[in-house]
Length: 481
Image: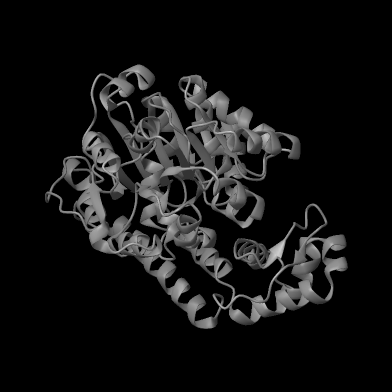
C-alpha cells in the first residue's frame, strides 16, 4: 500500500498538504528529518504514515501524557495498532502492554522521555526492531527552547538504546539557535538531517494588541469581542488567581463560561476539555495548562489577558485559532503592570545555585520531615517570610527531571537517588535566566512595535516575510485599536 492509499484509508484525506509527501518519502528512504510546521497543519501524519509502512515498531517520544493519550485514542479509533506507556497506567495494565510489545504487537508506541529511566523498559524495547524514532515537540530538547525538558536532552542516548534508527524531530516553534541545538542533541551532524520548514505564516489569523489598564477594561474587551462576533473563544491567563477574578466579573454580567487550570483535579480538567471540544460558542478562561492537544477546528478567538513570557509560547497558543482556515482573531490585552508577573516567573524559574544546594541538603538530611510536612514546610525552611513564590516547586521539578530524586512529596515517598547534578551551576542558571529575560524583552518589542507584527514574528524565527501581511494592527490600519 502506498502512502497516499494509507492517507485516504486511515485518515480520510484525498491528497497531502504542503511538504507532507516529501517528508514521508524522505523518512521511508531511511534519512533523518527536522520538521518545522505550524500547529494544526498535519505534523503527526509525517511519522504515522511511515510507521504503517515500515516493518518494525515506531517509538514516539512525547512530552505530555494527555497529548499522547488523545493521539493514541484517535489512532485506535482508526483501527491503527498504537498504545502508550506512561505513569497514568496501573502496574497490571502496564505489564499487560509490556507483554504485548514483547510479542510484537503495535506499530506505534508513545512514551514520555522519562520512561527511558526504567531499566525494564530499555530491556523490553531493545528486543524489538525499531524502524523509526519520532520526537514530538522537539523544541523540548533544547535548553534554549521555551519548554526545555532535561530528559529530552538524553535523546542521543535513547537513540543508541533503540539501535540508532531513522529519526524525525517535529515542532511548530524553533528559532535558528534551537534548530541547531535539536540536531546536536540528537547526536547527528547538520549534513545528516534535512530540514523541512513549512514556515509559520497563518494568513487567516488577525493579530491585534489593545493597550488597556485594569481588569474592568480587559473584561469589557473580552465580553465585547465574544458577544459581537460569537464563536469558540479561549482567554489565556498567566495566574490562576487572575483567571478566577475574571470569572467572578463575567458571572456578574451573566456571561456563561468554562474554567481550566492546573489546580483542578485530572478528572475535572478532562470533563471541561471535553465540554469545550464538543461544544459551539464556548468561552473558556484558561492557563497554559490548556495547551497541547487542543485540536478544535473552529476556534474563532484567542485572547491573552496577560502578557505571555515568550514568543514561542504566544505563537503556540494563538496557533489553536482558525484551524478550519477561516478568519480568527488573536488579541493580546496589554497592561504594563502585567510584566511584573512574568518577571516574577523568571525569578521563580531560576533559583540560584545556593538555593538548589540548600534544597538538596534538606532533602538528603531530613527526608522524613519533608515527606511528613510537605511543600509548605519546605518553603518555610527555604524562603523565610517570602513563602509565596514557586522556587521550591521549580527545584523539586528540576531534581525530578534530572533523576536526582525519585517518588513525590504528594505520595510521601520522595527520596534522593543520585548526587547533586553538575548541570545545575550558577553559570548555567545565569545563562538560562538571561535567555528568558531576552524572550520577555522581545515580547515587549512585539507589543510596542508600530510595524507589521507578523513580519516581526518571522524575523524572530529566522524566516523571510513580506513587509506587510494584511493581518495585523498596522496592515489593518488599527494600531492598538
